[in-house]
Image 1 (spheres, rainbow, N blue to C red):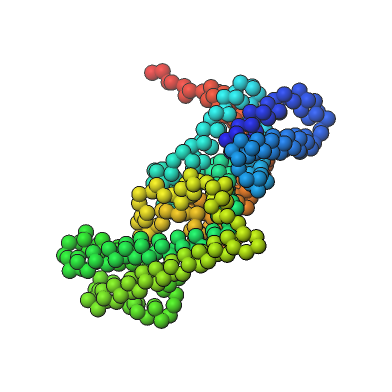
Image 2 (cartoon, rainbow, N blue to C red):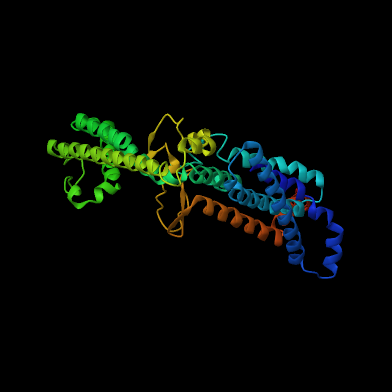
Length: 407
């Protein structure tokens, strides 16, 4: 992905600088600026397609990856390279010196590398620019973040070993997380509330109220709670004043039933997965799953998208509980049709109220960014911005100092 960005920036960043004399002559003839740009873009996109295709073919041969990844990988790298081409044309249009252009390239690549999501977790960023459970907006401005996520998620979900079992693994992860981590966290908070409900200290009572709100919100957002018969097990009024021993017992019983429900769900999914594996390994078109796993399943990639090195499997942030592990099995919960934001390595993204694959959504985002850059290139907004800064010192010199009266 960095190679695609680097090639697009370095190879094509001088295109407009080299054509300055031609452009000056064409401006007198009133020739179309858009036609010139479209001819440049058409040629550069074609060259980018050839370059990235060659790069992916050689990479697959060297790394012994499956050929089914050729077109998905090529399209992401081609998309990224096209973005870099238009970005390079913007730089070439804005500056008159090739030296300046090549100084700018590292300054543009470094943020793309740092905020791609590979070098460190987005959770490590300052809380001022990050949001728990979602990719920071500053990273959403980087094409590298969208390209890298699309490559990784698509390779994990659609490799020949994982693809038949992804749905099983998704439900298994969902049930296991709730039976273990969510149930344990809710039980821990329930016990804390029960032990401190009669405290007179305001700070402790504030924690009690916060924990009570988290339990209520978490329970009511769960699919398990949607069952009307189950919902009747809990009271409707959740306050410290109404937290009686009977109230406490109802919550305890509910959490026990909640845990058992997801434990049973987990067992059923595991059984269904094993049946599917047995079916694939028998019959006329039998396959050896161990051979498929050894050949097509990338353990390091799986560890990455499952985030198994994260110590805090569940975190609390602003009155909510967030899952930190297995992000590739967790669908986002958008607040509206325009809420595109999701956690990193999410398998799907919200597009105008519907969930689409991360691969499709991320590629659309990069092409949208490319279209925006083409707009800035057409109107030469970057060049006009730089020229406006260059005129500031001259304007300051023309400002006369007020005359000093002599006594």
